[in-house]
Amino acid sequence: MKIFSKLSILAALAVVACKSQQETTSQEKNKISYSTSSPTYWQQKVNYEMEIDMNVNTYQYTGTQKLVYTNNSPDVLDKVYYHLYFNAFQPGSEMDVRSRTIKDPDRRVGDRISKLSDSEIGYIKVNSLTQNGKKLSYTTEGTILEVTLTKPILPGASATFDMNFKGQVPVQIRRSGRNNSEGVALSMTQWYPKMAEYDFEGWHTHPYIGREFHGVWGDFDVKISIDKSYVLGGTGYLQNPNEIGYGYETGTVKRPAGNKLTWHFKAPNVHDFTWAADPDYVHDTHQGANGVTLHFLYKNDPAIKENWKELQYKTAEMLVYFNEYIGQYPYKQYSVIQGGDGGMEYAMCTLITGKRRLSSLIGVTAHELAHTWFQFLLATNESKHEWMDEGFTTYISNRCMNHIMDYNRENPQKGSYSSYFRLVESGFEQPLTTHADRYQYNRAYSVAAYSKGAIFLSQLEYVIGKENVEKTLKKYFDDFKFKHPTPNDIKRTAEKVSGIHLDWYLTDWAQTTNTIDYGVKEINGKTIILERIGQMPMPIDITVNYADGSSEEFYIPLRMMRGEKPTNATTKADWPWAYPTYTLETDKTVKSVEIDPSELMADINRENNVAQQ
Image (cartoon, rainbow, N blue to C red; front, side, top):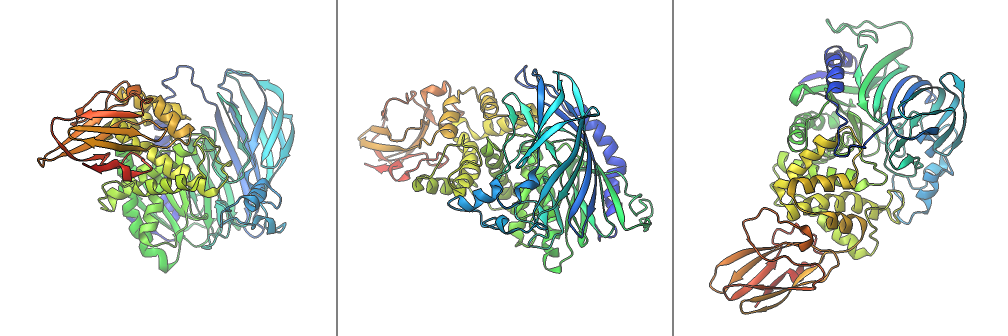
């Protein structure tokens, strides 16, 4: 491991910039395949070139953006839309009002936005915009810029948009901002005018109210001019380490004239660009698997240094785990950066708060790094399918933590089950099809997205078998990386791997609040009568203990599965869902019975799962 102070960050970055970037860019472009199980699949493409000049005293910046937009859809586009996320951090914004009217406001937000002064708010103001050199008409409505085109963009055609804009970095409240609670100067997330996604469902122009994003795949070329005392990290590969002050060969200081340096980054095939900056960042690098350089930027604070050093070894282990159980990380670097307001994933990096106990620091990093696969490579629409993003990430990061921290928990998802059960008992559950901003309670969103989403995969182990779930995740990654998969895609992938029909599973678990409740109704000698009490169907694993001291495992498939999972248990006749009871005949006198001893089925009442004669 090499260790760098803020005055030697560029030498380390140069390893990536000068050697890996050129190789990686061509390799990534060659690797990227847009093949999919659907022959009609398409997605849009963007190429950004941006230059910004940041004033670290006023927290204002000016920027230019050249965006080449390729319309790969079969539709003619007469309008385009941009997200202006920083506009959410203004009194009276939808984010502000929603935070002050929801029944359980996020304590990080509360009424803070309503109290921001003019110098503390955030904004992005578009000063000019042209399409292929011709001026455009546009209006700003909250966090959305609506643009009427001078000439429609035909299917297969491209248009070049040139923009001048000005921004102000808000006081750090939610994800983005300046001077966060730990003193990080700039957490620059969602900071630029970002083209909205257009896909088979149409335009996705949801306002920035509270959470979750959706973006267009493309290449980014970004130049950031900033006070020379600041150290930067984030998305992409640094292109000019020598130009901004350091000779790569010797590591000697070559300070340029003037008060600012311009940092030049390129990021191939991502759908976002994030950076953070602080004059007191320490920058370490650690070599990860497959030639990936892991970067760590954190405040020069002795109180956190030891934990951040230990984190580096664990992050390398995480990378190995996710590579093995999902698929290979395709870029040549990843950065863990102190900043933001908790933990949030971005392209090739994450921002996390850093003053944590070691287990918390490792845990939040495991979750955010896992998001690289479940969101930044498998780029679901987080606003509509937040459970595929947060839930799948929770599932795999819990498994990863169980492994790298030697927890050895039989079910690492147990906490997710407990949270889900409490939500059901509360009566506030809403279906997973609920838009991320439309939950009545923030708590209901969190449990649905993180816990119920994680149980989707954990419980799928119960339905099709753990090995089939592991094969499903790998095939899902292979088929849909660098795309925008939907719930149907993970369902169809699992069906292809297992040979089991799963439409019932996706429908009930994600589109309803139907619950699972199976019980032992009666035991009479060698006869067991089971009952379905809840509305959601499931196959049944059952352990029978006999009076002679022996035991036997039985497996009762659900008829609508049209198949069975691999099992060593005795497979019995299918259970048709509409039948409220099922009779199981055994060869010996029964002493006791337990339904689902693995506890992978999210049965809301386990008291009736066990019975004795």
